[in-house]
Length: 140
Image (cartoon, rainbow, N blue to C red; front, side):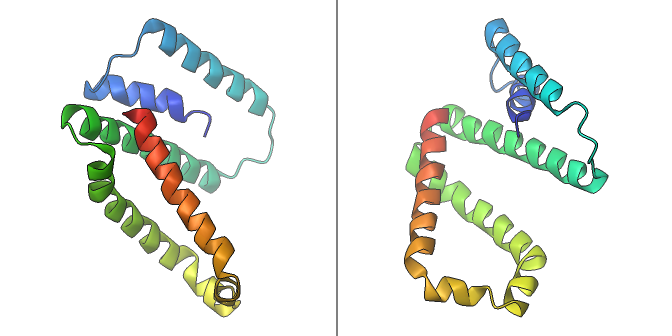
């Protein structure tokens, strides 16, 4: 996750969405270098996990770049952007979760936990929506 800003800066530049300043580029590269050094020597690499993480970093960076294009270049406000992007994001997450998580959750009875404790799960959902709005406000 620490490399997401580096990939985001690269995608911003490659797509012509924004041209990062040399100072911002140096700061992001410095942070990424620090993260790379801190993980050096970690001997528990699983190539599948690394591949999933790389895909996750790339898709998060792509989402941020596309969001910035919508907010700045197409003059959409935060609510309009959420109106268009939230259903797409929710659909992708639900599809992935239904394949990767749902069968196990059903077989282990994990869904009963949600039914028996609705308030914490509802609060978590509301905080997720708030975090999504905050992300859009920061990009804007």
